[in-house]
Length: 391
Image (cartoon, rainbow, N blue to C red; front, side, top):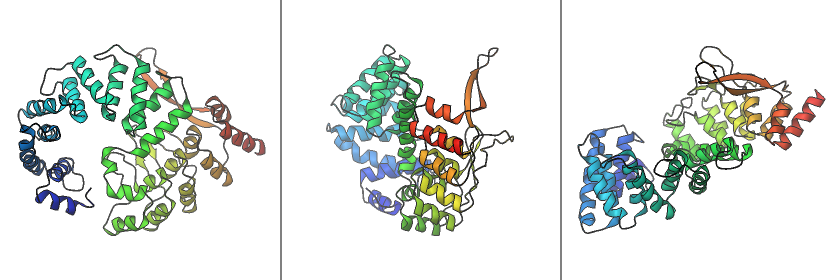
């Protein structure tokens, strides 16, 4: 809607309530501007004044937006009570987004006593109107048996409806259902498919990060502007943690990858994942079957034998391990063309400690062909058989 922060600020200053609300969000989260809760509150307050007149006259859209303003105030007493009041007015008029937010209020006890059954009823109303966030939240209630009898099949159904609309958290949940056979027949290929969609859809933050979007769209002209403005090419994005080069791998944006490397992006510069392991650009290309970017990385010195080691030196996964486990046949074929020798496949295996009853993960070596066959990666299995027969 607004091409730049300057355009957004101009619209807000001219009295556009939606622009004022958006600018308040950005000050609250530090998205495109320096985080400033005081300024966020000021813009929420300005927007609330504009919405209130229409809200008091019964306008559902204004009632909902007024509820949003109240709920997002920082360190303001009774903000949730006020938000709940206006969400409820809009929800009773059938406003789907307000029905969803009202469900959230009941689920978390914000501005009202906590009540899972009421949360379920309001999520259900919004979900029936096709509101993706409500569909996902309804699925979670079914999966956990909160406010309704536990039902994994119904949880799967609602996750799927939300995932098909592009809601990334639902895509992640759907992939997990397929991976664990929860509410649906176990299917590793579909699990990978939905997990990839989840990562490529991106969080709310990355959807509105213009540098990220420029890389995603392989827009070299826009990326060059960000580079010239001093963007750090070896620092991970907020939330996703991926470096720009890894984002290029995620979308197989070859021209952008070449541009980033030309201007200083390091092909062997890792990020540290939540589990403490290092993760390299070539690992990202392998995981997402980004053959074009993988080729660029190899041409510029990316190392095939770089372990994604842990801070304590404990070995992790190799790029080839990511490729095989994610059925990235094109990248495996590329690695083999570079005379890479595959001996075994490293995977993480979960075990339950008998004494503590806690989950433990162990890195083990398995037969890559057997793994591919077990997971129905038919073409990849045939490729590996031909390679191992030659070697």
